[in-house]
Image (cartoon, rainbow, N blue to C red; front, side, top):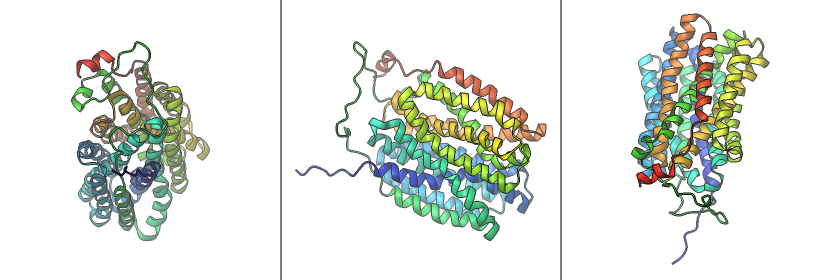
Length: 412
C-alpha cells in the first residue's frame, strides 16, 4: 500500500495568515465609527455596539465551530465562515444605514463568520506544528492583528472616495473570497503525526503522566481553566478597548487630527500583529506563565504612564503600540496554553470555551469603557479601572499552573 504523501506543513500557517489578514479588519472599526456617526447622527455608544456585538458573536461562533470542526474537519467550517464574513460586510453596506441592520449584519452575521473561520487554521496549525507551538500559533494569529493595517489605510481612502457603505461591500467581496478559498485548502495531519526528527519531551524522572486530552467538561471543572479565563478577559479587554477607540482617543487625549490618529491605529495594528509571533517565540523560551506576566506589565506601563500623558503623535503611538504588542501576545499565548494544559484532541471546542473571555471583553468591557468616558468626560477614569484590573491579572499569573497529574488521572 502506497504511503500517503503529506503536504509541506508550512502551507497551513501561510493559509492561516491570509485568512486572518482579512478577518482582522474587525479591528479597523474605529475608522468606520466616526463617519457613521456623522452620516446618520448616531451617538458614540450606538456606533460602538456593532463592534461589541461582533466580538460577542465571534466567541459564540467559535464555540460551535470548534465542536463542529473537531467532528468534521476544518474545510467545511472554514468555508462557511468565509461566506458569513463576506456576507456580513456586504450586508452592512446594503442595510447598514440603520442601527438594527448594522447590528445584524456586522455584529451577528459577521461575528459568527469570524468565529468559524478563525478557529480552523489555528487548530490545524497547532496540530501540524507540535514542536513550535507557541511560535507558529503566533504566526497564524499575527494576520488577525495586522489585518487592521488594510482597514486603517484603505478604509479612510475608500470611505472618502466611494462612501462608508460601499466600502463595506468592497471589503466583503474581497475578504469573503480570500477566506473561503484558503479555507478549502485546510486539512488535519493524520492521527499520531509527528514532524520528522522530533520526539515529544519526556516527563521528568519519577513524575506521573497527566491525562493528555481533556474533554470540555473535564477542562471547565479545573481551576487552571478559570484562572486563564480571567487573565484572558482582562488582557483582551484592555486591547479591545484601545483598538476599538484608538482614533477617537488619539483625537481627544493627544489632540491628533483624524488622519494622524488613523496613522497611530495603523502602527497599533503592526505591533498587534508582531506581538503574536513575538510572544509566541518568547513563551517558547521563557515559558507561557512568565510571558503572560510580561504582557500585564506592559499594559500597566502604557495605561499608567504613557497614554494619559500623551500630547504628541509619538507618545500616543508609543502607548498604543505597547498595548497592541501585549494584546497580540495574549492571542498567541491562550491557544498555546489550551493545548499545553488540556491537549489537542478537543482543541477546537476547548479553546472556544476559553475564547468566551474574549467575547465578554469585547461585548461588555468595551461598552463599559465608553460609558465611563461619557459619564466622566475623559478617558482618565477608564484607564485607572484598566490598570487595577491588569494588576489583578498580573497577580493571577503567579498562581496559574497546569492541571496536576492526580487531578487529570481522576478524570481519566
